[in-house]
Length: 531
Ligand SMILES: [Cu+2]
Image 1 (cartoon, rainbow, N blue to C red):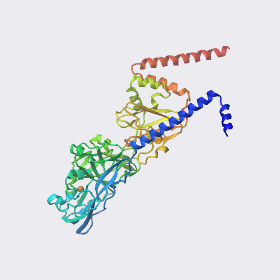
Image 2: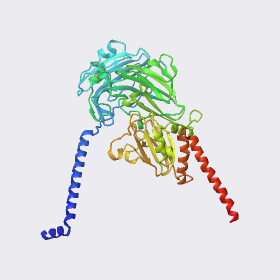
Image 3: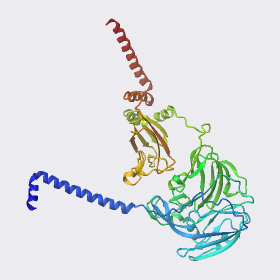
Image 4: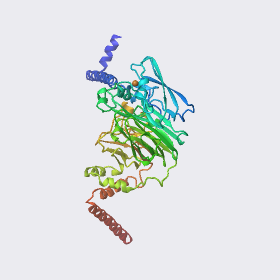
């Protein structure tokens, strides 16, 4: 054994042995560093997961009970839930969701209200409803310590759409933690029938860490008190009404949204991007005639609105608070309208004119850098004002497309349909690098990202952070009719288009080239017969 080892060592020349040793040491040190880095990142940014506490927007009773006396049971549950991807929060809820249940009543019904506070609660809880007439809207009759139940009754004397919330001091803190919902009191005969009804509640969340900071986030009384929310969301969490939770509607269907702004601090400017609020029952006043054809309706904190509309074309409509920076705090929902397109109402007009205009507005530097690459600016997509410009681009196979982010905020270029996102490793292309790193990297303001298309087809893509940003790349199977000749031709034409001011010179140069070519042809054809 011993001799064998010695012989083997002797077989290696001294220098090679040293190099091998150094290499082995390097490999070991690199491996240990990687191990250390992995350990640190796992501890620092490990996402947290908890059950989804977001109330389904479709979870609404279809009609009030026909009985004159109804029983409503509300369990005041304090539950850990998912506020955003990788962010958990200790919600205080009615019946385990935010918002709480949609309570549907008829005028003059008597309600027997049970407030049940489980023994494991840390707080007293209660209810105050704006539908209830009397001290504290029921708050005086319903203060319920952990492990107890209180019961009181009230009569629904006014038709309308009313908020309910917990009314235990500190009351705004209980609301900020998720204790709110809607009571609908319908008139005799009920509301007109519609095909879809949805229940959406806007609310703010105030957390110790900033928006998106991973891990458990505790309530920040200081931020709530100074009215600086980290989250402004629909139905209790970020992305509660996006992706596969988007509202599904067909073209022509009548849609009704019961909307609560729970606050507790901010007013909401409810707006549907790409839609029209055909009927707005302002501030939840369903006893009054609606306003017609409204773009944006103001919903005060502690107020509601009932809106109705019919979608006329297939679309992805976006529900927002038009205090629009709040989309960065989660205030965004999607209505996915499916059906037959109606080009007379809206249709895309694809035209070189649009690309041309954008090209001329480019800076000289961009034009110059474009002319050096094949296909020039036809391969560039700008990310501008939260949109891809142009949204639809057709390129021959083998083309490298470059996205230039001209916004000040970061975006991604991620293949797939935002309403049914693919797993990161299944995306044809993705600027975020999520499949490799497990994290979403953004194309920062002023940065660009490129991808070379090698497979024909039409690709839909979107921005992970702003899923209403959608674009398409169509890759054609051939490299173009002129093959490798076409890029130089494109370069020439782009030269004449892009360099404003030198256009005439450019055209002149082209004219001279063409003229010389024609003259050569003529002289050659003239020579041939004599030879
Ligand atoms: Cu409470």
